[in-house]
Length: 174
Image (cartoon, rainbow, N blue to C red):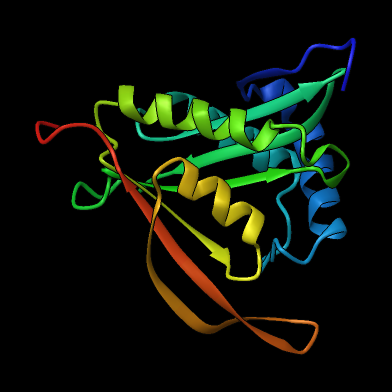
């Protein structure tokens, strides 16, 4: 990754089609991301992005290189006031660009955003226990292991464990 500048920014409606292409690509290139439902259409992603742009407890970031989306991080949260302080984190980077620090930059921006959010008090995520690289990244951002869901996902006739991780955000006054 030389010459061109990596850009990480909040997803906009105009990114919807490129996001569909990116998500399909990462789901096809690895079995570390398991899509249990059909991937969203461009129209679905437009609605999703519009909704995220209006919420204080949700964000979607895209990493772009040479006008192509090569990474994405999303925090989704509930509208329920009992749970709207919890952000569920999803992050993915195209294998072709893995190892270039893109995941680190996305995590850094997500954690900075969460610290500034008036609502988010906790970030949580789930990751396959065999994804040591991702676990190391999350632990580097002070995510803690909370538990393991045994045989939580089935990939290629193999039952895999899922590690639940979280990070507490900010101070007690949020």
